[in-house]
Image: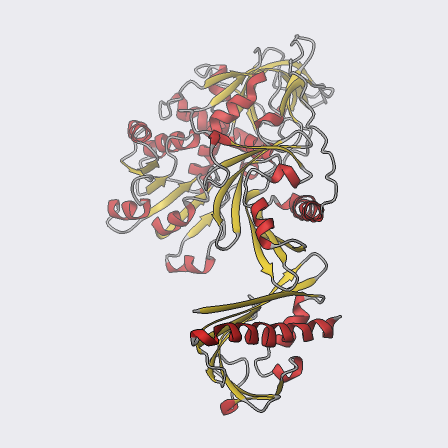
Length: 494
Length: 144
């Protein structure tokens, strides 16, 4: 966590300054970066829990929620809900104190947040200079009676009519800058020439994964905008390089690997990272399965080989990877305890083979896991949820257990006490997809294990929800809203 | 309960101000009205619970006990054990906050106490202006 703390003295009585600042809907009146403000859902502006919707002078959107406000302490706190910047976990406070000597006001404005490491210095400077110091300067002007500068009006965005798709023009989804789903634009793209060991694909379906959202927000630094997100797609080979030996035009292949750039109709890829697909998987099924399936594959075979002696706790058992882990670990003979947030999702985990289930919205999953294991705990825990579950996972693990933190759907896993792990001789892993699926040999191994599990009936693969490529933002929003029952793919013909 | 609250902005970095005011035995160094001070029982002036025994210019003696000292919050809280002021249950806190804009210091000094009703307005003025503001004025002059 980083902290930015700025303070100034305003030459006005504290009552006057508080009267302006306590109005959570007033900041567009004085802050130079904010073009307009409104409170959502028609709430009064001092309603704790209310959300203000800012249009910034650069045209982007910001949503912030009032989480506390005290007329007694003359302080308020708010958090960021949506922002064009990756200010993860941003909570800010404005606090006033009277300066009796001269009837002035001390204003402190501070925040804590967790920026992605490569952007840390830039974001700290931006919050300090462009938000707090610029705000102070405007407040000094406001209370000195100086004329207010006229703010530039937010540029109205041109209607986004996507250019017509044609077989000649490759199209793609481009991240214009880090931010919300609105930073994704559907536009023509240029393809590099096909190198000696590369093939060009016409892609049919593209997989949508959480990592794509992390790239979009800037939480992962895999894209320096503008750039194309996506790690997974299925398509037909259209051209091959001079050194390509195994593939020919017309072959049906798929991939799930770095580098990012899958959200497009056509793409050039190295031959070594492509896999031929079994006939029983349709294009859309494969595009929705490869990345999750290879993840489950390396988790269950190499990060922590699982067998009949294991009690395996699987979080988010109805999520994409979770559904595969439950089926596969059960097929490998392990006893599976599944957690999820609703009765419907738990029912799905049972039908996938889970031995027992825990609704972590309704019960403490640590206590429930200990109950289900005679107080011993689970000896393997697969935690793709992160922030909200990881501490509990460490507590629910058995002696010599292994906690595998492979995702952060609820937020970064945070800081934990390594020293305490010796009290149970715990092992802890943070596998990174790119380090397990980074070479041709790894792609071959994990895809072979996956396809064998599918062919032998160990894994049932549902059909994904299909969105047109041009509506990638909708697909990502559905994934973020946890409203999908399996996975989403993008149809490049739409 | 009567409350006195005085605050000011000093033209110096917060660490410079704190170095001076955190010394519970240092009133003669920075206030114009304390002529001598000692810590009773040979205790260290940073030790919570220690008692300062100091003389005013008019010869009066006051004994105050350190209740809390925080280098993290830059604040110091103490109570009056004995004085000729006619206050009961007197607890005061001196606290600093950095003003990043200009690298200055916000200083507040607050006291809460009980007293006879007819003495209240006199004490508010005596403590607020005669003690807290006078001490702040001396600091202000020192850093200007």
